[in-house]
Every structure is written in C-alpha cells, then in structure tokens.
Amino acid sequence: EHLGIGHFHRERRWANDAIDAQYGHHYTHAFFTINAAANHSEDERRYMLRRISQEFMFPSQHTPNDADIIQFASGLEAIWDDDDTSLPSKLIISYGINDCEAGVVVVDWKVVESLLRVVESQRKMEVRHVLEFVEGWKK
Image 1 (tube, one colour):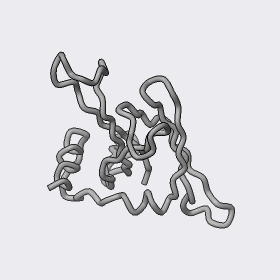
Image 2 (image 1 turned 180 degrees about the vertical axis):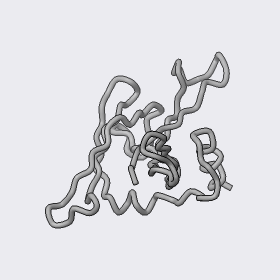
Image 3 (image 1 turned 90 degrees about the vertical axis):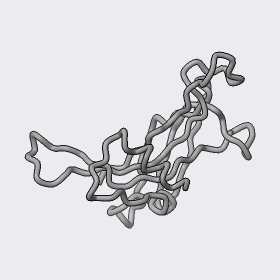
C-alpha cells in the first residue's frame, strides 16, 4: 500500500471574485493510499484507491487560527525510528504558500493513520469518484 497526498481547489466563480487568484483558491488536501489491484499481470498493473482522509488545510504561518487560501503540498517524506522499520513514525510534508513562500510540517504517522478511511472495495474508485466519496462524509 502506497501513501500519497493530493489537493483540491475551488475555481473562481465569477469575474469580480473578491479573491484575486487566477487559477483557483481555497486549496484543501487529503491523504490517500493506493495498491495494485488483484488479477492483473505485471505489465497491466492497475492501482486502486484504498483509503482516503477527509479534506484538511495547514495552519497559516502568519495567522495560526486560519489557513492560507493557496497551499500546495509538494513533498512527502517518511521518517522511521531505528527500533521499528515496519511503519514510519513521522511524515514530513513540504508545501507552497500563496505561490510565494514555502512551509514544512511534521506529522505523527499515527495521526495520519487515524484520518484514513477505507474506500468501498466493491466499487471501482477512479479520480472522478473521489470528490463524491469525500462529499458523502459531509452529510
């Protein structure tokens, strides 16, 4: 099972949008895991979405009780303790802020593990289905 971090962003809704972000704003992130689907040869390997977290944002470095409207996670590094090599103990996530600054956060692996929810195995999940799956949690 492979861990990743993805993002969603909201498009501009009208020309006079009060937020001046040409390519969208209010970015959120989600952790996800994929693994190879069974019954496929090495040449035809297909990866399926297995687990996903709810959307989240990183706290602003300038206003800790808020978040920046543009955040883009771009790096994910696992850190293992010397005494346990089966799972990482922490994750380091690097991200861009408002397309002009950089940020780094360190997250405990147990926190990430607790956020991940299993995706229904009977349903083939493609990228276009992810938002429907996440939207279902909000109801």
